[in-house]
Amino acid sequence: MELDSSEFRTWESIVTSGRRATRRDLQAQQTRRDIVQAARRLLGGKGYARTSMAEIAREAGVAVQTVYSSVGPKKAFLRELNELIDEEAGVGGLVATLAATDHPRERLRLAAHVGRRVVERTGDIVSAVHAGAGTDPALAEVLAEGRTRHWEGMRSLAMWLADAGALRDGLAPEHAAQVIAVLLSNEVYFQLTRDMGKTFDEAENWVLTILETLVLAPGVLLPVQGSGPGP
Image (cartoon, rainbow, N blue to C red):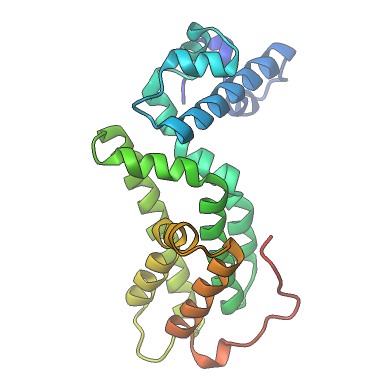
């Protein structure tokens, strides 16, 4: 993202430029991160429509103009939401661990853990996006992007399971992807934990058990040595 003022370049732009970051660069990056985190708290608590730029500035302890120059207008925060969700849920590290294992059951377990972590750690943001998407086109776009990411990830997992010969007999990869995508959706984890009173451990184990039964061939339903709670 390009910002309105060169004084507030992101850390990424500093790294890719090949130059040494100055103290001012680091301070600007920290200011920007403080602002985004302030917006995250307010958006999660009040929703997008009811959160003003003045409130974001006050929460971050900066001037309103600093919010504009560091991040941009209010809609700019929406571009941060999916990235922020992935960051706070630790999705990048979990996906890297998932990609590094060649055991089908372990891949499915890690995928279930990713779904759990998104709702467990960023459920307030996810709820705010879902609640506002029906009336706000910008939030609807954020939700659509998140769902596209989810579907692509689950479809990739299903194709890998198919190539590994791990799917149940007669189960097409596309059908497997649909089953995995639905069971690992935010909505399912919300229903299990908020509506049915399950703990996140219980919800994750429930989802994984159902997935194993519906998706994996019986021959791969063996304990993974050293497998334990998710990272």
